[in-house]
Length: 497
Image 1 (tube, rainbow, N blue to C red):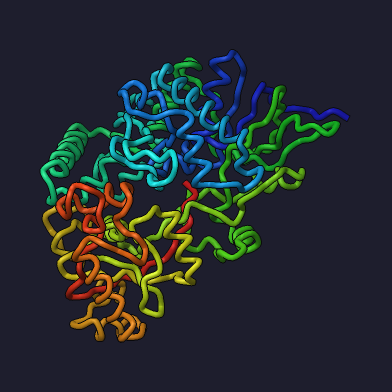
Image 2 (cartoon, rainbow, N blue to C red):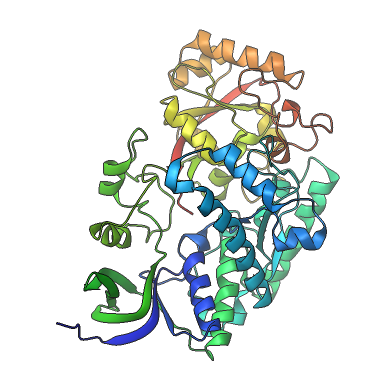
């Protein structure tokens, strides 16, 4: 018995994040009729909330700027970093990622999406074979949402909104050090002027992932004469199967159940299950998590993935996420977000409940998050000194380098007059914390970290204080002796963005 359809299209796409939007654009470009269904009221999914950085070795922008890199270096890097993990990252998939990734970026540029290379944003593991410290990532330029007309208010807010500035993702690392070097000050001044100009003109300027999504939506509008094949408030409930083949899906659009035929296929680009507590508990393995701390897109609840799994779709890595160590302070706002990025800064270290360090705090967020799980240090403590507070920005007031008093009053930040006093306040052994800080200080004074190698990679250095240490990568750029100690509790948040 054939299904009675309420709507028929060539390609039905679940999810309006980066993957779904690109698929819709390509379908339109090739003369097909797509339909993107987004269950949220806002467009963009996790891509829209993210930093919006697209990492691709030997990408078109690198070639245009004459940045040395090759396809072969990209393959060597993936082989050395990822290793042999089976079908989840096979040689064929890696080849396709690099080849199709290049074609995707080239396609977007040709369609008018404006991108900029993230110069100096090193690979996470630049010391591995094929690694590159020059910057293999690209992101969208600042984009005026007014160009979207009536759709301008229907996008996920940009990551930059958390910081109060119209700032690109690659500019964030300079803004936080605006008082530490002339170059960082120049970048920060550009950001401040851009933000001021946008406010004076009453413009909503999108950056980060919101810029990517906004620009792709603008192209979608242009290709469809202002009537984009995109439904919001449209949740894919289940897939429709006939004769062993997926031929469409059941969709709830504005509360109305509909059967939509997909003549050429259904693309599932609806993300993961960051906010599905039952799935998180079921699949978390040795990294237990129920989604309580997730900062993923609110629509990241896994129903589409479950629909595919009911049809025995192959899955892997369900126990993994983009682990983002974060400071959780109720109503902490930009100050909490800024404090949360402090692990790469000199004068701050992580310690577990035994008062000992357990990782290179300046490594990538995923690496540090996994280290927290491995060390059973969820949550852990970030220990920093008073000099750290004086040197670095916390919040949206760049010249007010003080911790908000309510952080201390609420107990989110603990202060101690001595290391022993601090240890008592946070419940860790005083002698262990004292030894940890003394050892760290001893080696950090000479730019070293023999325990975890902090500062020994270009990635560590590019996120460290540009005013500290020699020109070569050194722990001095990310490590500094810790004096008058203060402390902020940290937890690990899975951010599938």
